[in-house]
Image (cartoon, rainbow, N blue to C red; front, side, top):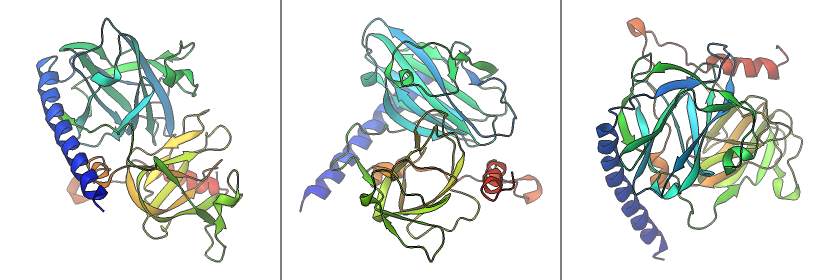
Length: 353
């Protein structure tokens, strides 16, 4: 009967410690290199302004002489990023006007010797940018620049620190803080916990096609995922709080759309997320934790029932997707940047390529 209050107290105490440490980290980062002096916005070559959704990995190896006493990583990406440090999924986020750089305490994730920073980035419009810098024991250890390698297709070595062959140099352009991106100073962002009390993930229990007259299918009866068409509704049976993950069929290269909700979502624009997989990777991970029972998926081929990687509600609230204001000239609201990508997916599903 007392487990829930105890778990809440422990989580609140942990978040308070994280906030205190990250505030100290923000002061340290500002003291060493102002706001990432020498860091440049980087991206993959040949896709700037292409207007086609893109996702890829940007990778940088960092050698340390000894385990760090302090280490902080500041990062953001337009439109979104998922950060891995030595294979651990540390967190996710994205850029919006006036956003701070997300600041992570990574001291416990770094070792003496070689360490790998791997960032999966995605943009629904093709153009984008990634900015990051790593401060170790008060000194700048790495910044985003042309030394980073871009991998347009996934391979297991990317996350596990194995030697890498191939890739291409990142295109390094605007020197921060110049350019069209306007950022606030670094702000603390709690990392995802290594372990979650109780089950780590919860898979959807049943699914049906989009048509209301279709019957629900018990997913526990299938080793994979049933053939229900390109527009599918899945149900967890109860509300869950977590990060939605999709196990994709094939090479996972097709772009899709996602809606989530406590009730069956209506597939009306805008989508809650554009599913942009890295080719060759059989998994897509949402950038933000959400609370939902149902998910509506369009244009996504699934290999297994979708899963929610469970996150404590208090931590999920701290990591939730921001409410983005889209104010335009003379009070006219401009179109969302992902509108074109969503329309392209709808046209594909309707046979109007």
